[in-house]
Length: 230
Image (cartoon, rainbow, N blue to C red):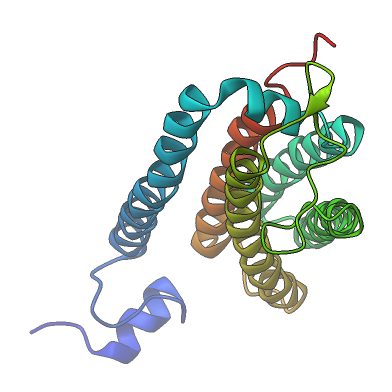
């Protein structure tokens, strides 16, 4: 006779869902689901990366001139911020595995601070582009974007900034989702939901956060470092 749901809960803890035989099976299923989700995200961002690379090949000089108007220092700071957030996430997963609740809460809060800092800096960059009239559309002004001493072709520059806002905008949206996820994780961690037996949500959210960080690691050189010789 099979064990009753109450007996299973008492043996494995309340976090084990009824349709899983044991915590390891539940963890493996959750991890597989997250990896499959990340695979779809790779295909999604991959399409934008391919479009960017095609247009960059066609209009390299115009893309390089437009890229030089981006604030490389803000982009560099954001890169450092995300690398630090990846570290705190990795340490947080380890803290969850060791059952260190207070340390986990601190590391999750630090991750939230880094994530919000990134979004704040990115908002500052977008605001600068708005005031410089580098938003694609009828008000776009390519006068300050110079190519060989002359204003760059406005159409080609708008293609660059269209891709810039599309790619950084989708990345920022994923960051906002990640911040929301870590707010929930922090609350559950504070309540003592995670322990040495059950830390799968922390691990899977960590995978998502690392993926978002890796996307930025590619975006930064592609958008900011096209041509910085001048």
